[in-house]
Image 1 (cartoon, one colour):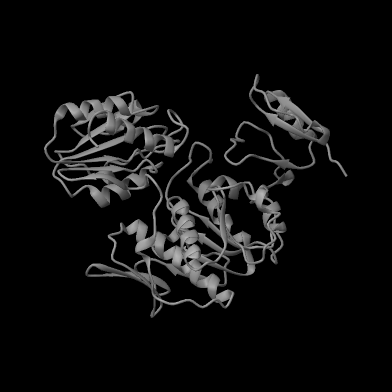
Image 2 (image 1 turned 45 degrees about the vertical axis):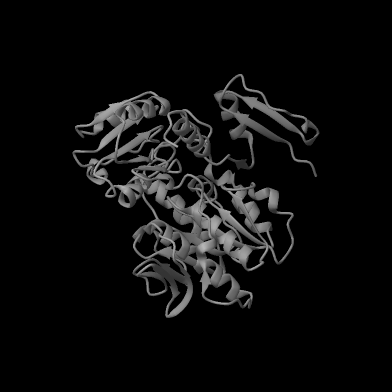
Length: 419
């Protein structure tokens, strides 16, 4: 049976390709038409991230892409959410499964849309689903069968973010915590030992992850990092990893360890992890001689900037920190930036004036673009310093996404002879 449906947008004057009009699609544009369509509809599906604050919505009508997917997928599902690290954890899980010759695919917020994967009926295929707070919030008003859902749910960490689209920090946390409601009755929940907001509320089968965990934990012994499940050694690496990446690796290993145990898959332990790759532009070192230059374009909230500073701020006496973009309703806390008197803070982008006004640091410089920032740094002819590009803001004010921003930063480094 064909069901009539509307595509709506609160903006006027935009266009859609409605070549599928045979499926009874009607296009409604503008705020008034949107309100009318919402009032008349029996079911509502919102694009993740769409700001509903100006709309009058009967929340009992809201359905979600996530719940449709979970109710209809027959694959083994690993869901990942968190303020920071969720994309990296998905990417690491995929690489670990590849190393064990286990077919897998990343979907959701990072990868293909979830509904494009419903048709994948290969029982051996593992689907790794990155879940944003927007996707989870839109699924919080209706339930899934407890016999369907995620086999493993992961909540990596929590800090302030997306306050431009969430009503409050509590609203944002409530959306993130919805991941627990999407885990199967017999599924498993992984949470961060040191992030109290991630701790289980309803899950009966839950395991903690982190440096101080007794479940899944890691330790640094000399030049080697060891990743453990209780007393059992899962993996080792000789690579130097930041604390956040040690957490990310531990989450990925925990998920793979649980998944293989569920499927009675045996493999040789410990795994040597030196083959792992990390996401582009997340604390990526692009030069490391007398100038240490770090491209951390993946930093899209202040907490990710604080993590980068913890990793790189003490290497050289002079630190040049580059911030900027769209703050999304957040703010930088000067006490957490903890810049010394030798440090220089460059600020650019949409919320540059706001960031500048909130920081009392004695060396802060306003610029309109990354190009202007690097031009000014180039003129200083620094002999020894760390240049940390960790914007702590959304890239959408000047770029398509963080990848576009990261590539632009590298292009300007080349332009001014830094690399």
